[in-house]
Image 1 (cartoon, rainbow, N blue to C red):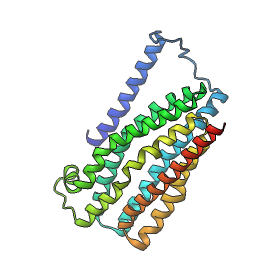
Image 2: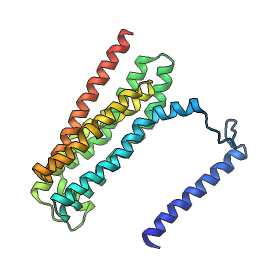
Image 3: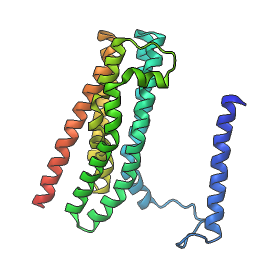
Amino acid sequence: MGVSGAAWATNCGMLIYSLLGFYYYAKGKSSFTTNWKSILFDQTIGKKILKLGLPEMILSVMGVVQSIIIFNAIARYGTENDISFFTVLNRFFLFLLTPLFGLMRGLQPVVGINFGAGQFERARKFLKTYIVAGIAILLPFFLIALIFPKQLIGLMLPGYTVSDNQMNDFRLFFSILPLLPITVLALSYYPAVNDSKKASFLVFLRQLILYIPLMLILPYYFGVKSIYWGSALIELTVGIVTFFLLNNYKLKLKKA
């Protein structure tokens, strides 16, 4: 069934997964008591969920909008080769974000539990530990992207001829990898310490204030190449702002 078959397989898999979940809880196999028939909406809990999940939801939605804008800019000011090149670059970038999203989900409950128990210093230590872990995970890929960009692109796009300019663009785009754990994990840390406004601010800063306007303006004046150095500059700016926000937050906690 081709691509259509992949879509049907995805939906069927999720349906089976959901039915098995209902069966599991309905049979009382879980380690805790569940009211599996209840689908009522609790307004108080719903508001908390929305408040805590809003930053990550905005990040996901605006990421799609960002991709649409960038691909339209490349189609307008670049060539088919530029589209293929950015597709490979973007796929590799999303691949590297996957372990960071995993760390986000692990960080939030650990920080939240300790923060709720008044163990502020321990919560900060966990944030540092997770950031170091994220940097350690990304470091090998960071070095590979800087030293062997041609081989890496060839692995993901066989037969593609990579120009010297594209190799430099690849290096420039991934030069900010060590900053990503700070930015990404801050989006999980702030909701966990009941300060989701700062997480929302960082998302709006990155996506609405910087990325979308600059990706609409820069390619018009500087061509496709500006997408790569512009993206690196944006990530650098957001990383620096996040670092200062985290430091300022630590100072406030110490004073409190």
